[in-house]
Each structure stands twice: as structure tokens, then as C-alpha cells.
Length: 295
Image (cartoon, rainbow, N blue to C red; front, side, top):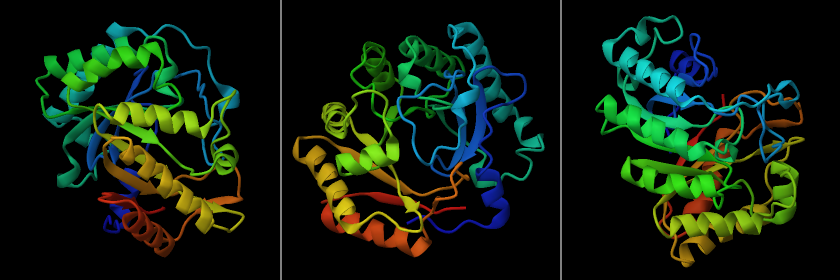
């Protein structure tokens, strides 16, 4: 269970603007889940995604045309962000000025942004570029993190990226918000014929070869939290992954942190999140759960 955050600290970690200086792809943020500086990589400027999550705050009606990822630019932007954090100039910018000392550490280079990063055809080359920037800057302790909705884990570009991640302190943070197909369709609103069974199967395949982090967002719809039956089904999905030989290193349980477009979607109260954490621990053997509270 994560300790509650004071107001100044909360303001800093809630600022996840995906624009920094004049950069095209890179945006450093202070991340509560990373417990430090996360250098974000946004290779989805078109804002395209295979989900249309009911809680997503991104306006996908104003996306820009997707072009080729310019790998040289990405490398230079990553190099600059790393060096600016190291030499201290980053912490003098107004956006980062009040960052507590314990958060002034580079934890990871994280592929996330305005869409699903694994959809990009050059995804593996972008990961390779991040690995090169990490090596050039001698950041052996910095992770490469892929934050994904797990809909393209079987894609060629993701499969090609796996050995690069494995060789560069990589982690996969896979979204799993539901236990039943009905709730999955209601909450994540996938594009095309994507099913929850497919997603769990693909996560299981990946988790059998390396540990994965599961990211789960729970919230209220019209004032009601997830029903008990849905929570039980979600726990069964986690058990299915483990029973098939998959390894889950961590379950990140969180709720709404930034306002969604619909007023019907709101954050779960702290006590409800605490109860959900206890339920997961009780029903999933050896579950390591970390809870992140709403704003």
C-alpha cells in the first residue's frame, strides 16, 4: 500500500504533460509508479489506439497524421533529457523546481504517450534506439519500460523488441482492467474483434518467458464501483496466468488520477481501493500489490 502524498508532491507527480521544450517524442515526468523521473517516449502523435477506454482523458478527435518515427531525433532527445537530469538543469525548470530529493533520480525510459506504442511499425527500432541512448549515457540502472494495453503483444514489431528489452533491463507493464468479457467491452471499448481471452492469452505467453507488471485501473461508473462478481473474475484471470506458468512481478492497482471526459466516471475512494487490494492478496497466491490513490 502506497503512503498518501502531500499536496506539493501530488502536484508534481500529477503533471504528465506530453510536451517538453521543443521535443517531438520525449517528455520527462515525475512518476509515482516509477518513484522518480520517467523519461516518456510518445511515438503515437496521431493518438491512435486499439482501445477507446471510457476513462481516457485524451481527445482522439484531434490527432495528427502519423509519420515515420525519426530515430535520430528520438535518440538525441533521449540523450538530452538524460543529461539535463544528470547535470541538474532539468530541476531548475519551473515544472520540476519543487521535486523532492528522493524523486530526483532517473528510473526509466518509458514507452507510453498518446496511444498504443506497440502499434507503431517501427516500435522495435524505437526500442533499439532507446537502448542505444541508455548505453551511450552509461545508464545501466535505468529501465526500459513498455506501458501497453496488451493488444499487440503478438505483433512482429513487439516480438522483435523482446530480446532488446531483455538485454536492457526491460519491463512490460500490461493493462488488465476486467475479468469478464462484458465488463472489458464496457470499460476498454476495444477496436475490432479484440477479446479479453486473447489479451490474457498473450500476456500469459509473455509472462511465461519473463516477469510482467499488471496495471489495473478501477473506478466508479455513475457512482458504483466494480461489482463483486467482476472482481472475482479479475482475480481468476490473474490466477489463470500464474497457473499457466506465467510470472507476475507486481500488480499496480490504481484509480482515476486525471479528469475523464465523462462526469459519470470518477475515482474510487481510498477505502474501496484498500478493500480491493486485500481481496486480490487473498484470492491470488503470492500477489504483490501496490496501490495508487486518486487525486
